[in-house]
Structures are given as C-alpha cells and as structure tokens.
Length: 262
Length: 301
Image (cartoon, rainbow over all chains, first blue to last red):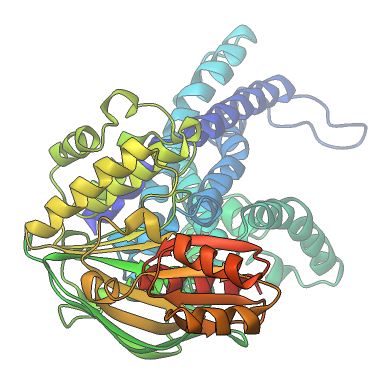
C-alpha cells in the first residue's frame, strides 16, 4: 500500500494542476482572511448585533482557521475529484490498473494520498492567512492575536477538514467517471444543492437533519463550541464528513471502478 | 521472472459489448522464445483480446492465463507481463520520466530502471518534456519503455509499429527479436501484415473475433505463390487459364481470380491471347498475404 500511495503522490505532483489549485486556494484564503479582519467589529446593520470585535478570540479564529478553510476546501474537493476522473479522461487508468489489478487498493491509495495533499493545502493556507490576516489585524492595532482561545486546536481541525474534503473529492470522482460531470456535480452540490436543502429543511422545522449534511458536518468540525447553530460535536462532524467520502468511494468501487476499462 | 517467459493461454474467450460479439470463442496460445504476430483487420478483436488477458475487460466467458495464472492473481504483474495498449494512455501534462516513475513507485521497481528504459528507447533527451508535445512515434517508444520497465518475461504490444518511421520499425524488429531470443514471450498485434511479416515467427490470425489460422509463419507462408487478377469476364478467363495449365483457386463476386502456377506476366499473356479485358493484375502474393487481403477486403464490405 505504501508503494501505491507513493505512486499516487508522484502522479499528483508530476502535473501542474495541483499547484494551480493550491495557488487558487491560497489566494482565496488570503482574501477571506483580510476580509474577515476588516469586517470584524462592524455593525452588521441597524438592530443586528455587531460582529465579534478583533480583540475577541472568536474574531481571531475567523481571521485564521475559518478563513483558511473557506478559501481552501473547494480546491481540495476539486483536487480529489480530478485525481480520480483524470485517470479516465487521459486513459492513464490502464497503466494504473496494470500496476495494481486489485482496483479497490488503487482507490484506497488515492484516498490516503489526497488526504495528505489536503493536509499540505491546509498547512500552506494557514501560513498565508497568518501573514495576510495577521498583518491586517496588526494594522488595525490589535496585533496577531496568537494567544486567542482555542486558536491552535481550531487550526488543526481546519487542516483536518480540508484533508477530508479532498477525500470527499475522491469519493465523488470514483462514483462519477466523467471529469466535467464530476466537478460540476461536486461544486453544485456544495454551493447550490446543500444550502437549498439546508434552507428547506430548516423551513420545515427539521433542523436536526440539517446538521448531518456535509457542509454543516464540516462546520461542526471547524468550529467546536459554536453555539450559533446546533451543530454536531466536532469529532462527530469530522467522522460524518469522512464517512461521506469513504461511502461514496466504496459505492464507486462497487458500481463504477469494477467496470470494463477500454 | 526476467528473461524467461511464460506461456499465454487464451481458452474459449468470448467478449460481448452489448449485443456485439467482439471476440467469439477464441482459443490460442503464445509460446516463449518466439515473436508471435497477432494479426487481423481493424475491429477484429485484437485489442479486446489483449485487454481481457490483462484483466482490464471482464470476459463474457472463457479464460485467459499467463503461466497458468490470471493477470489479477499474478504476484508481480508488472514484473511478469509488460504491455503497451495504445499510444494515448499518457497524461499530456506529465513527462515521460514522471510517467515511468509513477509506475516504478507503484510496482516497487528500482528507480534507476526509469533512466535505463528512457535510454533504451531513445527518449533520454526528451524525457523531462511533457508528453503532450510528443509525436506518435515518441509515444510508441514511451509505451514500449513502460512495457519493459519491470523487465517482464511476457510482452504484449498492441500495434507497436504504428506511427514509427521505417528506421523505427527496423529498430523495433531487431529489439523484439533480441527479446524473444532471450526466451521471452512476445506478442505483437498489427493490422498491417507487411509491417510485422519480417519480425514474427508465429502468426495468430483473427477476423471478426474468430481465429482464422494459427501456426508458424513459414508453414502458413509457403506453398504456391498466387496472382490476383480481376476481370469483367471471369468465366472466360478461368477457361483460358485452365487451358494454359494454370490453377484457379477461387473466383469472388467482383470477378477476382486467385491463380497459381504462373507469374503475373504469364497470366497477363494468357488473358491477352484469349482477348479477355483485365481491370487488375496484382503481383505475386504469398498465401498468407492473400488470406489477409481477403479478410481486410471482406471487412470493408
């Protein structure tokens, strides 16, 4: 398995997509971080309470781990999806399955390799938000705020969350072989379908179901102790998210990966 | 495993794609120590058969084994069988070296083999360039390097001469002959007989998914030379040829006769003497060539 994981990592790093996606992730993370640092403490509008001020731990967590996650997870998802579908698109799947005729092992190796890439994305993103957000907060006169409550734990969980989104991408790509269809489906579900379902379920007073959706499970993992919504416990949220990825990949192995390669 | 090849056995192989019978109850063996040509027109099921042997397609029925084992059950697949299937199985954004590195890492092959293989197929200088910019011939060389990476005893190469220039084909010929003389099993497919005729020892001839012939090239390729002649008056020509002591092996619907016992000059002269109009008079072909021609012609409908 180690050999297959190393092979998968070489696959990822030997084309340019991974760093194009990484640059996108870093850019979005930086923008999100600076934006969060700028709006902190602002009045959201007449009658609504002000956002947490920069002096608070909540604001610092928004500027660092939350901003990194928001800017990065979708790129990790796309990396995962293309990591699987690219094999079919360029027919490299032939060489892959010749090296490892046991196809489910290939999928497991991809899950592990992309989780590792997700960790790398998350760590790189943290460096960027620490600089971009930290400088912005310092300019506003609050300093880097590195002593904020639960900051480092939340940063660790944010990295973990990004890694799981990459795993989720492999799951989606394993189930849907067509690259464009898989990317569109993955992004559409995350940005359109899920918010809509969340809204509809909330409107139907089914809040207890809402928290099991991937994005909300992800938010639960990211924001332990968040009382705004009734999220799952952070570790339950993480497991739920991981299950989405693994179950999709397992379904993909059963339905799609076993099919003929011609 | 290296150096000594295993026998490849295909037994009663049938592969259906929906209602299309791509391979139909095919049985043949490929022995070590020889180059075997896997011949047939386009669409005759060669690639499908190779993909079944390699476990990429699931046979509808029948079995394929390498040294008695299914590909799936080989303990060291890349070290046992080397395959090149099509020149398009590369990521255009990945370099040749990286493509081989990916395989070497996955199959636990010494990374030094990557550079050796690039050198062996003459890609050292372009090895770090992205495959997207490669010519078809360069892709063929890379496919061959990938097949050889694990130093396998069995080589299954799909149309390896396709896209190579004459010098490349000559190089490939010598290379494959050397591999077979080391005791390896070498199977190369082609839809162009002349491309492989000088390379192969044995022939497996396929048409519409069925085995037409299998045997040593010399056994299939001996016998009387044939002349192909086409005329609007086949009956008249047949009588004239018979009178001149030539043998007509067959006449097809388009007025084409297969004749033995004489050169094209003799056949042409007989036709001229008999006042028969000729539309075509083809040079001598071997029996194998004429069988192959019939298959390809029939394939065009």
